[in-house]
Image 1 (tube, rainbow, N blue to C red):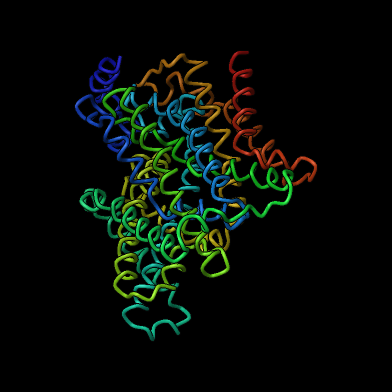
Image 2: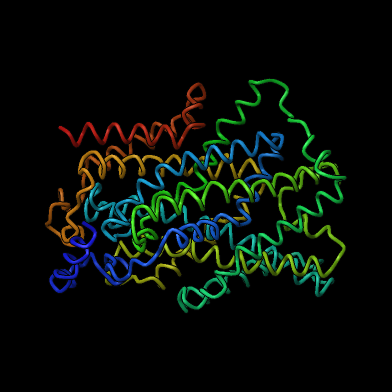
Length: 470
């Protein structure tokens, strides 16, 4: 089936090349381009999972009151749950070689697909800003290490952010190939830094006993569940973006087996391992400093060995740069290109991402753990959960995994619906988002917001199915 679909798009390429819905970046991959095996998919996830936001995710739960095993359980469970829609949405990418915005055309229409694509792209811009802010603070700390007088400069953090932002823009303009040699080094850099921090925590904290014996701050089961439920939603929300655009990557996979096993090996175990480092180190800061320091850049600034600080900050910069390009530029660039395929290519889409990333003020999103987890992660999951529900329902239940690839790239085909928009998909999306967000307006229904991703997914899935089956 894979061979037939790929050959079909090659045969009709001349016919659809003039369509306003296709460009080089959005075109379906050929069989010869599908070279990613299980190892490559797993390595992709390891590279994306081993990042500072993962560390912040774990340390934020500790700062919020969980003990080590409660935090680790919450993260592991969230990643096992999100693996399911990840694998399901990846199926179409592997089978037909199409990216996320093109897949969305089947359920939202050839033009209506811009709605979910832009919603996902805006979230990616926020993530781009967050990663860039983290890297910028590391760069600022590096300047302070070399020039101690820089510390008194109040605009130092902003300058560090701008410099690191320009570094990202440089690699966007020069294409991902210009940074590929660094991508293979990024995860090992962060793992080494994490292990160094873990050793420091073990040594300075008097062994793992005192560190992992830090009790939960919750006095009752009710207090725990009140914190756990939105936290679990936040854990799912952490990868809710990639669970939508995973076809952007699996369109290069050799087989369904490669994408399924690769994701299962690469995602949950890596998240659990690197999260444990964040948990142990943050727990150690309570023992050593009397407070939970959840930001690794702030923690590194308390170290007195210049060589260790320098090496750690450089490692953090390299890893953050490569993760940012891979996870937060490739997909939104495709999403923005879906708006005007003939005018927006990867570079222009990437530059749009970079500019919006500043506008979204990432320093506000990282102001504290509660803004990061309950505001940012849970908030945007109310938009992405419904999209996932619609995509999965459409592909597996409505179409039984059968798509007409050619019609995904032309107007007036079977995915045209009415003037390019499938009103049933849009209504289903609105129903899911409304139900998830109503809890912010009506206090007694706040639990709907706490379960935002799950509620939105379920409501949109059911509504879409009922509307499409009429």
